[in-house]
Image 1 (cartoon, rainbow, N blue to C red):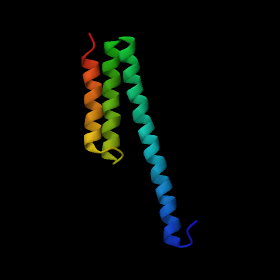
Image 2: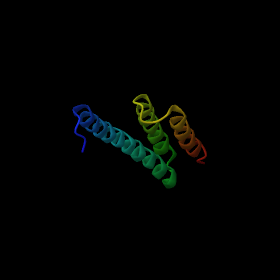
Image 3: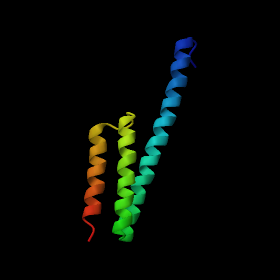
Image 4: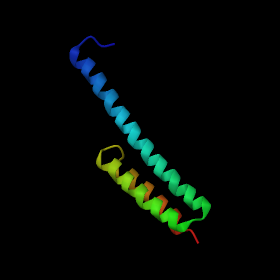
Length: 87
């Protein structure tokens, strides 16, 4: 454990930020799983609705600095491609 006050603070701040980032990433993963489940079930309407929600969460995560913009773009692109490929 650090002895210097500023180092102790950095540890606390980093833990707080890590917890926030983990929660945001977890929410994005959940939304992505919902889209994939709808695709697997073959329900195009549900998949499109879930896709919109997932894109919204991915964009929020990107704006908060959790994901790089290219990573977010790649995730959105892959999900959109999968939904559009449905019959």
